[in-house]
Amino acid sequence: MSNHNFFKTFLAILACRLTRAILRLLHRGGTTLPGRMALVFDKKILEVVSQGMHIIVVTGTNGKTTTCSMLRNALQESGINPLSNISGANLLTGITAEFAAQATLFGKPKKEYAIIECDEASLKKVAPLINPEVIVVTNLFRDQLDRYGEIMHTLNEIKTGISLVPDTILCLNSDCSLTASLATKVPNPVYFYGIGIMSGNSNFAGNPTDSLSDAKYCIHCGTEYKYRYHTYAHLGGFYCPNCGYTRVKPDLEVTSIDNYTSKSSDITLRFGRYSCKVHIGLPALYNIYNAIAAIGAFECANLDRQSIINSLATVNSSFGRMEGFIYNNVDVQMILVKNPAGCNQTLDYLASLKEDYVVLFSLNDKTADGHDISWIWDVDYEKVINDTYCKGLFVSGTRGKDMKVRLKYGNAYEEEIRLIRPNEDIMSVVTESTLPVFILPNYTAMLSLRAELSSATGKKEFWKDQSYVAKRA
Image 1 (tube, rainbow, N blue to C red):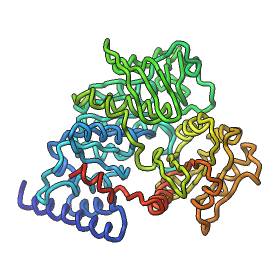
Image 2 (image 1 turned 180 degrees about the horizontal axis):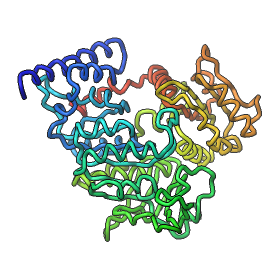
Image 3 (image 1 turned 60 degrees about the horizontal axis):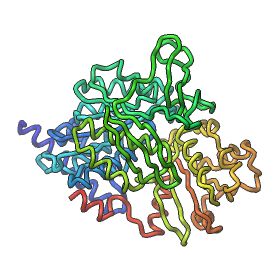
Image 4 (image 1 turned 135 degrees about the vertical axis):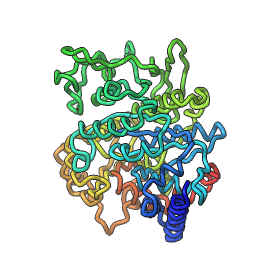
């Protein structure tokens, strides 16, 4: 490294550390501004501070944070302490901040492994700088239309990023026709994972029965897909009756779901001719997808298979994703929702509980959320409106009134929907009944509500959590 480059690296890392230290003294997380300051001094600082590391990147519309949490948990239980952007700051600035803060002032990484969540549109900026060993693509759904545009634009953004690292192994969801199509567009080696057809499971039979599909027509010829079986949204055993584009038989496949509860799942997996049982300590079908994505990433990175299988039994909910709190002796669970497909899966989970609960929908329209909130009209809120176990509907946020209107159009009586005003104590209102509370916020609403809950319940912010700090030390 030349003296000029050495000096730039030193200044960039110093700026990052000082900025983060100041922000945390001010009780701020310091997730993006430190990275922005580092980039002022060295535009390619990320390339320097990630040199020689073993890196797994996870991208896609839904499941990034939870999949990363599963990967991180598995490595930690194996005695490996990875670098990870646990806060979910997944743009170039946030990722740069994490790597620069975890390097020496001379630019040498302190960690050998990294698990990185990356925004779909940022992959083309991040991937060529960190040169990951594995890129996991979870799925593709409509998300933040005012930022990403149509879903094909998001697919092309990911394809561009992958094309810049042709030696990186791709770990792709074979059940998503959009994600799987990447294998035909780039030269990278590919590993597929998915959920297979299961005899006797009527939930997965035939063509999609819901109206929500972000990939109804063949990406190659435009013919409407047929399905041998269907899991949710546009995922499943798709095939095109015209050109023959079809779901690839995956390298890693769920062959049966043996037990499926509101708390966890038990599945049987096939690896080639080998099969095994796996217990997943989180509920919902989408977490089965997240779990097999994490196992697939371990396979691609030549990490110990059994270690991640064992760790999935004890995996915890991640930052704002099925994260639990106890507030005034009431169970509160926060589940981030930000697009129709993910929200529908969460509503399915609530409807499966078969016990009384109340639900709070908190909707903001800030830049990080996407200013276009029209996606709420594609969500089947009727699943909870008509659920006899749902005993209360609350709405809040900068677009809380819009959410109230959407629920009214779903046949909820206006007097049953409580709009929480900005000056009211949200948590005191929603816990009045003492029933379990489920909070379904979008991104910035989640951040503010999580901070309030963390403060009220004594749960530390991620950057103050000493157990997390200890694991990273």
